[in-house]
Length: 146
Image (cartoon, rainbow, N blue to C red; front, side, top):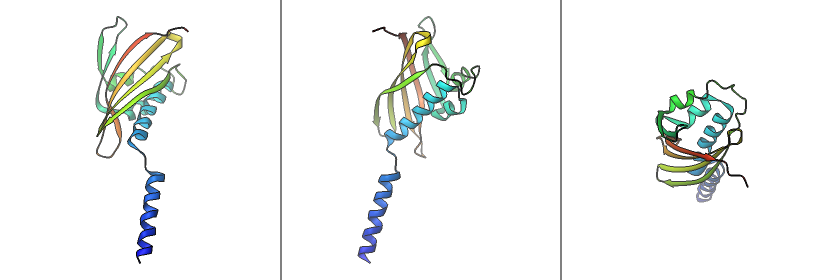
């Protein structure tokens, strides 16, 4: 009997290791939904990364603060053809997790517009374990030539 319990416990541990995802993996998955959705104009994929009440703090063309709710931001991608690559190249630069909060720093390059964006996302884990963007701040600069 002890042997059977021991092997069941070992099996459960191995399943958790094999199929469980770390918080960092879950955060990366959510941010990847944002990256792919914005790069290929998939509105539902973008929406899946955001908390419904998320607020974004961006820069307008004059460099002034521009605040908008997530739905308004998502609507900016409606005019683009779904599935067509929009020229956004994205990568995560850092992830810092503290309990159910995380800060993610990302770089988005748009060579056609000669722009480099740095996005800082504040994410929160919901009761189901899903990580969602609750706030985003971004700035931009010219892409520096090497």
